[in-house]
Length: 164
Length: 164
DNA sequence: ATTAATAGTTACATTTATAAACTATTGTAT
DNA sequence: ATACAATAGTTTATAAATGTAACTATTAAT
Image (cartoon, rainbow over all chains, first blue to last red; front, side):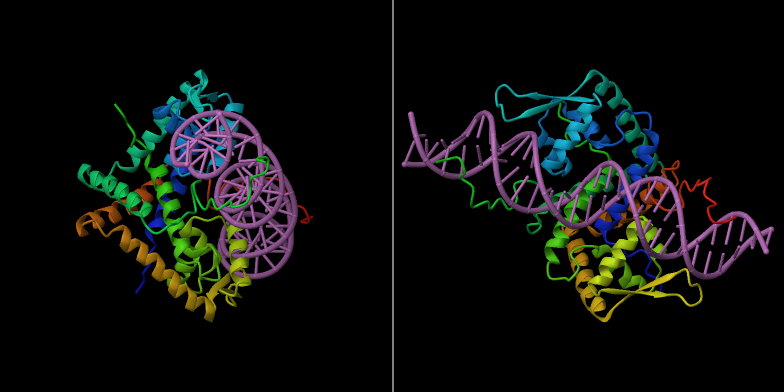
């Protein structure tokens, strides 16, 4: 009685993503960024959004995002522009080079998605995608994980330094 | 024309796993291990397997695994026993305490899986799981990712130090 | 008896995660 | 108008995760 396949959903999802990004980075060795492809992909659809927007949508901490953007700027993939209407916000915009290379990134992502689904029927594919979204939103409503995201404990009761 | 939801499968899977482990670790705050729950879960089904086996099944690098096991030993969750029939292999076995606490871990995993699927029909659930497995095995056969796993480049053409 | 392969380890460098404290800016309530 | 809260982003520090290379010990293959 082998029960080989009793691996929890979350673990399976993590494993899948590891394989996925392995394949992806293999097919994107010619891009000037060696990582953060998912951010480029996201920017392709949301060019000019602020950093917090990327964080919220890709579940990345904002302190990590600072370095991600720094890296992408260093490689001339994006630029960081202050929003004149709300100077707290920094818009992240793909550069000319970034736009061009992001095309390749998007193609690579979509190629993998297509190959992955090559032997899955259209109907099953539809169900899969729908359930995947459902699971994610179910999880977001489960008891306080807090682990990610930035509006978290925020207890900071002290402070008030240069206020007086 | 918003295209909010065009996030690649691999990215969605990664995000799902982040939320998932956030919820999980929230519900397992009383366990003596603060992490590596998926390894405990795996050991519950495969108690006494060697380290490589865990690596292969959970897509974790073997050099990382050393530290994971060290950590779990330090917290008296597992022990590491040399296989007398092949002294290269180290069997990883749950301790008495590890067995007990792993019960809780398994319960927590299954509880989350249940909650996630609470509003998904049995049929859709079945399709989802089947496709998820299919996608993983599709990915494994895509062109060399190399990124993970241990039988990789292994080119090491030099070496031969103390051979002569 | 060499040589190759496997399981695991060590050491190192890089990347990522996490928390806390911070600046700058904007929103809100009195 | 002023005080306070909230938001976006940054910095710093620490810990953990990840990846690479070189290593030991052991077993398998020739």
